[in-house]
Image (cartoon, rainbow, N blue to C red; front, side, top):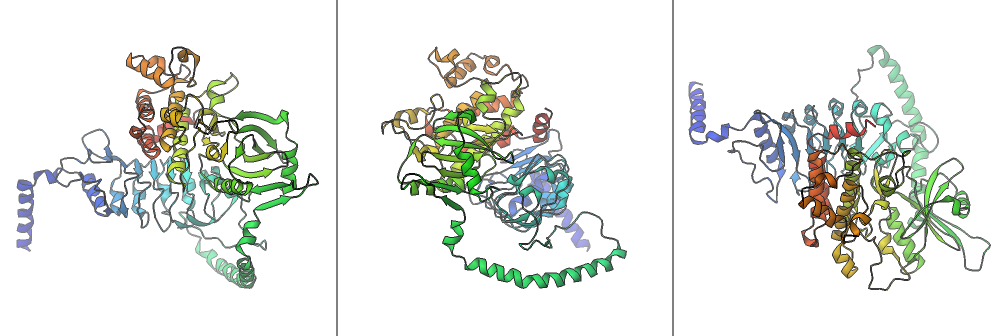
Amino acid sequence: MEMGIVGWSSLVIMLTVFCPSSLALTLDGLALLEIKSTFNDTKNVLGNWQEFDETHCAWTGISCHSGDEQRVRSINLPYMQLGGIISPSIGKLSRLQRLALHQNSLHGTIPNELTNCTELRALYLRGNFFQGGIPSNIGNLSYLNILDLSSNTLKGAIPSSIGRLSHLQILNLSTNFFSGEIPDIGVLSTFDKSSFNGNLDLCGRQVQKPCRTSLGFPVVLPHAESDEAAVPAKRSSHYMKGVLIGAMATMGLALVMILSFLWTRLLSKKERAAKRYTEVKKQVDPGASTKLITFHGDLPYTSSEIIEKLESLDEEHIIGSGGYGTVYRMVMNDCGTFAVKRIDRSCEGSDQVFERELEILGSIKHINLVNMRGYCRLPSSRLLIYDYLALGSLDDLLHENTQQRRLLNWSDRLKIALGSARGLAYLHHECSPEIVHRDIKSSNILLDENMEPHISDFGLGKLLVDEEAHVTTVVAGTFGYLAPEYLQSGRATEKSDVYSFGVLLLELVTGKRPTDPSFVKRGLNVVGWVNTLLRDNRLEDVVDKRCSDADAGTLEVILELAERCTDGNADDRPSMNQVLQLLEQEVMSPCPSEFYESHSDH
């Protein structure tokens, strides 16, 4: 034992003499090294995480709180191709406010120790391969603003403790394997189905799906481990009797359910697919017909009800027009409201090819993309049915605003920029094949009542052609937003979309259209106009006068990003994933709570 003590003393002396800097790392730095050890870093992006460094605050993806304690404030490592698991040592970073590990290849479970990070504001783990369930005590993260666990392989029930997260502004649990009833308590009751899409076994009010069997009986639903107090012991015998009765009833239903399941499985794939299609023949010219296709099967109306409303649309229902046709507002008898686009352009190929391409577009679901509900072919026209968004387009709100309509403050504009970037990055990087929009502009950014942006008209630029346009001309896009190489060649790419997004950022900052007469008469577009003012140090003339709350930090980030997006050389522009990463790191960090609190004060 004495030798052991002497040995430890000698080891400490040796470390001090030969490796003095290794003792400089704080407990947070040592915890980061433990976290690194469980990552599979094939690209060596964490190569500068070295155990003999004097500080960990300069390591890739790490930022610290100000002060001498070097406490870790954020870990930002998205899109780094990291594998492995998250070490339980993450729980040692008790001052952590932001953890962004999205779009990697991490697996394993979400460690329960993460809930020790009680100052956490934003948790991004989407786009990985995490398994298991959500930690049941996640309700301990009382400051959490953003919880994004989408696109993983998580399963089990949604913990009721999430309902206690009173500061939660964004919840995305979509595209997992969660099951059972969504607790309708606390903040969980404020989120709609967009937060839960792609979890087929979930039920509850939020997803508009009753938690009952096909025979109408309540089902026994799984619930996550509860944070509530245990049921008093004196109730346990009554509870067991109820369980036995329930078990007997369940056994009685099991045979019927199994037979129903087998019968469903016997339906051919063709027959199941046909349920999404409805074709109604009318007494019209030979060969003419009316055909209605719904893409998600969740329209609570009969085919005849929808077609009757579509056929009754006329000039008094028009709410706008665009490059692809006229837009109508369609109100059903129960006041359900939809936007209907009457297509004025032709399509390449046959109707069958057109409808198959539309079905692909109709299958795309993302919170920042306008939801396409269906397609109707009438004898005289073709119509696309979309969700109706209450606030209209960004173009209307930014340029056609009246005293009765809401002014866009800086927080609104940041939220619109971030959401639009998410939607466009999804089209570019998560759809297969990728979708180039071709016409990103403020009139194609639609806003819901929560000021959440939704990109419209995606996929139509390639699908629809201008019958009067020559084959070598640009057939999609709007002057002022078009990249130089797109104007020259007519060939749209992801980088031409990035250019258009950069123009959109400048439009949000300046409050001016890209072809505003005040600088077009000088031979400039908004890109050249802003660059001229910035060279002359006239930043105050760049920012929209109606946007007095713009802070210098985020304004600088947006202008620098817009400059990179609108670079004349397409190869030097960032990808939309890189744009999104920068916005999430610089605009949402370090204080996402301040961003949302300032937005919610309206």
